[in-house]
Structures are given as structure tokens and as C-alpha cells.
Length: 165
Ligand SMILES: [Fe+2]
Ligand SMILES: [Fe+2]
Image (cartoon, rainbow, N blue to C red):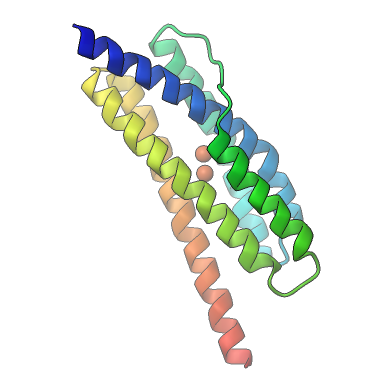
């Protein structure tokens, strides 16, 4: 079936995209943890770094399920998002707005991942890759949870600022 083959290729291509992205994120998270001023934010980045390591391993299992080597393909979107985060770190270093900027950058990363994993999970199901679908769903859950944690930190920081004002 030609249409099935196309979706499988698309799945493989998108898998390479997110594999590249996760590895890039793995190098960015320690820098973001180091830069964060709030202990909560630092801890959130450190926790997610450990999760991201597992997510990379999960992707390698998905590659194995489709008999493909675990290989990334440059993802311009994540490069851009991470670059923006690095700009924030540089431009807002030592200012009260640094954490807000780091939170915004991190949430952009999570939203990108949520979009990708949501799509990949759906495609895995359609392709009958049940184990892959489960692995991708597990990671999707972690990305959503991370996003929610970041939102909570952002809101509590905003509240504190409002209280102090
Ligand atoms: Fe991730
Ligand atoms: Fe993530």
C-alpha cells in the first residue's frame, strides 16, 4: 500500500527530528539549570534533564522497533528555540527577569516536544507499532507534566512579585 509506506517514512523522518531535538535539549538543560536563579526552577530543569536521558533511550527503542539505526536529522525548529533561550540567558544575566525568560524558553521547548510526540504517537498507532506508541505516549506524558510544572513555577513567581509590590 503506497499510502502506508508514505506514513511510515514520515514517521521515521519525524523520529529523526525529535531524536536530534532531544539530544540538543540534553545539552541545553544543564546550562539552563546553572543559569536559573530560583531553586525550584533549577530543580525542575535538573529533574527534566534526567527524564530527557530516558526519553532518548526510549526513542532508541522506537528506532529498533522499525529496524532503523538511531540517527538524528537536523531540526531547525529546536535550534531556533534553543538559540532564543541562549540569547535570553546572555541578555538578562543578573537581572530579575532572567528566570521569567528561562521559563518562557523552556515552555517553548516543551510545547514543541508535545506537538511532535502527539503526532508520532498517533502515527505509531496507525502504523500498528503498538510498543512504539506506548513509549511515545510515556514521553508525551512527561513533557506535559514538565510544562505544567513550569507553569506553576511561573505563576508562583508572578504571585510573589505581586505580593512584594
Ligand atoms: Fe523531551
Ligand atoms: Fe521536554
